Length: 236
Ligand SMILES: NC(=O)c1ccc[n+]([C@@H]2O[C@H](COP(=O)([O-])OP(=O)(O)OC[C@H]3O[C@@H](n4cnc5c(N)ncnc54)[C@H](OP(=O)(O)O)[C@@H]3O)[C@@H](O)[C@H]2O)c1
Image 1 (cartoon, rainbow, N blue to C red):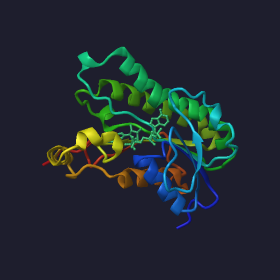
Image 2 (image 1 turned 60 degrees about the vertical axis):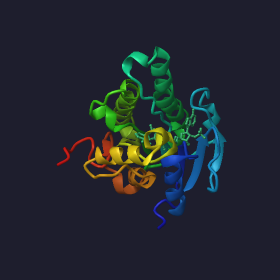
Image 3 (image 1 turned 30 degrees about the vertical axis):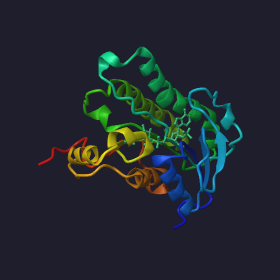
């Protein structure tokens, strides 16, 4: 396959989990992948930029002159009862998930405007659409990501830049390791999903590939659940 031949895609968070799988998939399809995160992805042929979403200004990305797509795969799972969440927890989740994406988009928008088919993919969580206990901080931040994406989708449509969001449920990545740390936890998590398993990085990455591809050139402003039916179906 070479759907992405000649395309430049920036992945923020390609060193692990969903972003890593996405990078692998895009490279296999001919894309040039630029990665940005605190550590470089191992074993992938990417151009890497050191980037900490919490402390960077965003100008670190100024060397990128032309882009066809961007995926911001940075995120957090900071689950606590509301009375144990500090205001700093909320602030940090907002900085990582929302302001990090804002910095990246603000510093790459001119590069994205150079392509006729640019696509931006952001990540939310199933917990925004359905209330889930202990998710107050992450759901607040990811809810803001969804609002950001819809606003930007409207604003950038004139430039043919699409903006969409993937809302995963529990996916087997290093981010979710505490939630999947024993066979019992894994089984209980699987059972909560109508399609009775947790997600794999490939489940989520393939949806991101689809949204970055020209096959979705008329899809913008959408939040797409990739969640084993969790966000919209009732188990039998
Ligand atoms: N896994 C799940 O169950 C799940 C569920 C719902 C939503 N999501 C969302 O899906 C997306 C991908 O998550 P994942 O599970 O693939 O996570 P992951 O395996 O922890 O990967 C996160 C990536 O983000 C990078 N990153 C983290 N903090 C960063 C920072 N301060 N600055 C720059 N890069 C940073 C990491 O690289 P470095 O450490 O090298 O910086 C890593 O490449 C996230 O937005 C997450 O919220 C995941």
